[in-house]
Image (cartoon, rainbow, N blue to C red; front, side):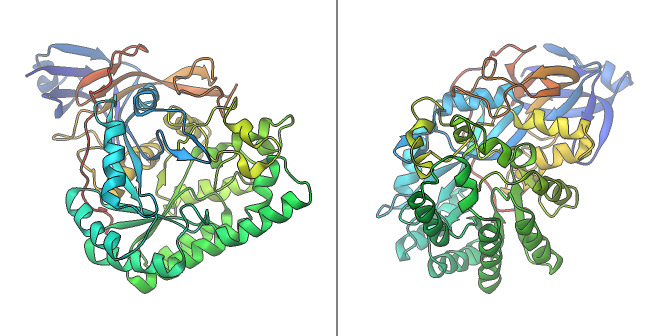
Length: 465
């Protein structure tokens, strides 16, 4: 059984910061001991990693990615191989992607399709949520079976009529089923019916540029849908997780529900924390790079998101990584913003951007690890196997250099996309070494992993309930 010792670093978890050495044995954390103590100095090892001056943190858990996702007549540019490799470069060692049920087909068919895409191709570990696109008696019964098998979260859409949209009756039925089987409903909360009217009107008036994508997807329509989803979940007696929260009024709806003691949770993404409608308005169709849904908001919404993260009104930062190349994909909407594929790259940048938030004073070091590692692991039934550094946990460990400076750029990133949403942004902090279940994937800024190392993770139910 191989043994690795990481010595000299500051171990940072959601609950503690301790100067400790870490012993890894057989792919798991075996022990922690203070530097230079008898226990630490007695450990023999096959591999020693010097983390002096570094942080030793859990591998990131990105609970919202879309590898190889079909959308708008094309596919997300990252495969499970390229996307999980990029995740590792950015210090993320677990992703939870979305298997998609197609209309008229079973959940099982969608899940089998996504297993075929991912199995044997991932550099780090992975699990699945399930898109619930066609709510009927058969798919409701399938929910029970999937929860028992470790697919414990189901995404529904109040947006995208004719594609993924579910009306309130179908949403209520799915929530009622989840209340009985322990599943967690994830909601894309935007009033898609109203948005489609505004899209039609904008195009008829000749407003075709990318910036109008943000104009028609109103803050009020995100807030209204968030409120409606919360009330439906309340009627059903079900927990609710609102994905990619972007607007101050939506945060306020989640906060109000939580203050009433309702099991309502919220996620935001780095693009809403660091980018804004200024990016959507960049000239020469450059704004298309930033088209995603929910959309980027005016900069003044960012403080509400940061405050929500500090106050635990929002619990998780995921990426909603869904990359489309500017050339040939985003360009599909040059004359019509509604034809720009919705999605942005980010799986490689999340841990670094959130560390920059620590440097900037938005969050603490422990909160960084909580929202990027521990909380997503707890939310989706993976803790303490994932999301922490403690005896018995998987040895998903990142040696992180908090003083390294880097410039984010498409020239140096590893995502399979031809632009960076954060091109030219200077950040402080960088991954040095990444272990997945004790096996090096990134070693001193070199990729040493391989497709097929990552294993599928059946998940438990939400651990906040």
